[in-house]
Image (cartoon, rainbow, N blue to C red; front, top):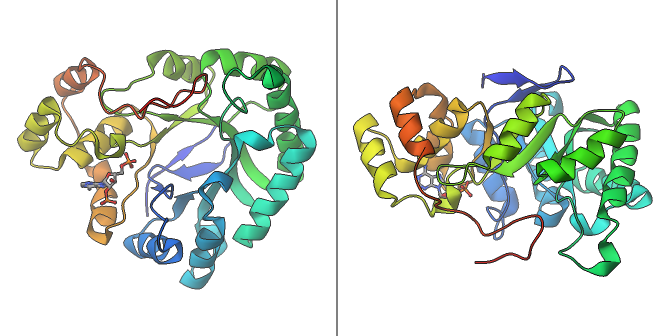
Length: 283
Ligand code: A2P
């Protein structure tokens, strides 16, 4: 069975999950079913991905008990606020056809970028969090957390939270380390989850990574995943190919020498998606 880690509330989470963003544009049900066949039991979706129905159906039709899965979904940024969160959560459960979630995250800390109308994002986050705390206490969610929160987003939430976030899901890969956010979360016992751990394939030709992948006799994709795992992150790689889905589950078996970890840590910015919670996407 896939190795698991313990979150700050005692819940166990598989270290490798399948990221469903964009992987499901054409045949979501088929692709998620393949991922389950490849061995994934931790599936990461979001209201925004518009594939919660596909994920729910693939889980149901796999014939594997719900209790063997770890299912994450996320509250969309446009739906922040107390009532909205309660309503959106019910929608998510209905789409998944499930009666609980393992993990529910606030997808982005603010509704949009700098629009005066949304200057109260700090309050909206706190209101969403209060709704999520209630759902958690009712047993409808096993763990609650955030995504794309930097220290200045987390500070206000932590001041008002009864329950500390269990995870923060960030873009984390060689060439994009987000060290301040990682250190901040480590200090607060908030587990890091890595989205786009392969830098959405933008890293596959990076000379240093190619050199090191050759040294270990593995693909650059696997090297990226091993780097994140060795940093202690939970990883959420995506692939639409069965053999790569399987390959990525082996990232755990690789140990990189500390000197190589250092070389990767010191490489220049690379593979960044262009997404930042406080500004419009640049590509
Ligand atoms: P594909 O779907 O064709 O397999 P990320 O998870 O960082 O967003 O990266 C996803 C991208 O990485 C996709 O383009 C995916 O392509 C590619 N990818 C995933 N796993 C591998 C792998 N093991 N080898 C090569 N490319 C991979």
